[in-house]
Length: 222
Image 1 (cartoon, helix red, strand yellow):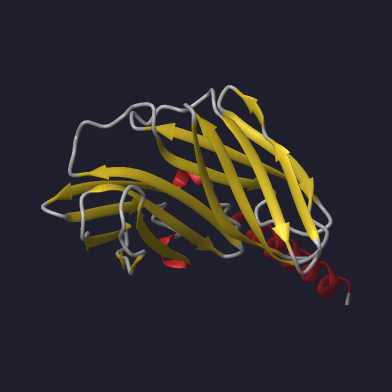
Image 2: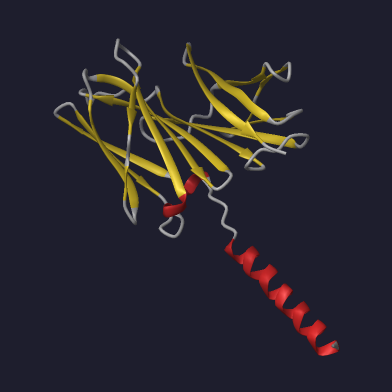
C-alpha cells in the first residue's frame, strides 16, 4: 500500500509539471500584421508563433477614415504558418484595419491605419494603436493595468501624445475616466473592474491638434 501511494504522488507531480510547461501566454509582440496595396486590392499577412496558430481565432474589419465607405468584414485564410487575406476596396484613401485575436482566454486587439493609393504619407499621423492588459485575460475584483502604445507611419513609437482611458459598463453602473501616465511612449493606467461582463474600453488620443478614438469590447471573467 505504501508503494502505491508513493507512485500516485509521483504521477500527480509529473502531471502538474506537464500542464505548467504546456501553458503558453501570447504576447502582443508575437502578433504582427503587414499590408501591401496594388490596383485597389489590399493584401495582408498576419504572423503568429507556429505552435499556437491552430488554437487561435482572428476577426478582421476595415473602415475608411477620410471618406464615405461601408465597414468591411474580412474572413482571413489560415495556414500552418500565418493568416492572410486579399480584399478589394471601393476607394483609395486612409483606411483603418482592426484585428481581434483570441487565444484560449486571451484577447489581443491591434489597429493599423494605412493610406492606400498615395505613397506621400504624413509621418506625424498615427498608424497603429496597440492596447494590452495585465493580467490577461482580465478578471473582476482585481487591479488591472491597461497599456497603450502608438506608432506613426515610420513605425516609430509616439512619445508626446495625450491619452485618456475611458471604461464603461452600464449593467454594472460603472464608468472610469483617467489620463494615462506617459513613460517614454508607454501609456498606462490602472483600475479595478467591479464585476464580470463586457466593458466598453475607449482610448482617446490627442496628438498634433487632432483627436482620435478607438473603442473595443473587453470581456471580464471571475
